[in-house]
Length: 129
Image (cartoon, rainbow, N blue to C red; front, side, top):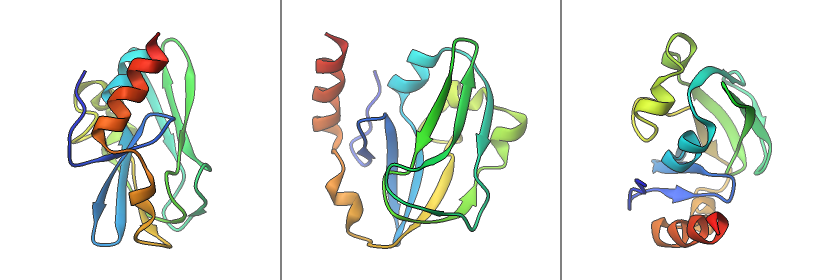
């Protein structure tokens, strides 16, 4: 299982990367493995205000439809256009090309309240038991 050190993580298996007051968000390698083959990604449009825990969209696999949640409060400033035509990127490159949205954080320090890679790894191990 791949858990990059430079990202933050949520209990719902989203990752976030801080970029100048913004948080680039996607789902983790663990989440995409659990979902299986991703066939469709539907995300909220740019300009949508979100609160931590709000859905920013859905990821549909051959097994299930799962919500993707905002890890922080803010506004969606970017949506990844590549996922519309190539949802399988989520399986191939969950931490790179398959980012989902960028959220301009209301409070730029909010990301620090999320799990770091070590805490997330422990969380996944405990959940898998």
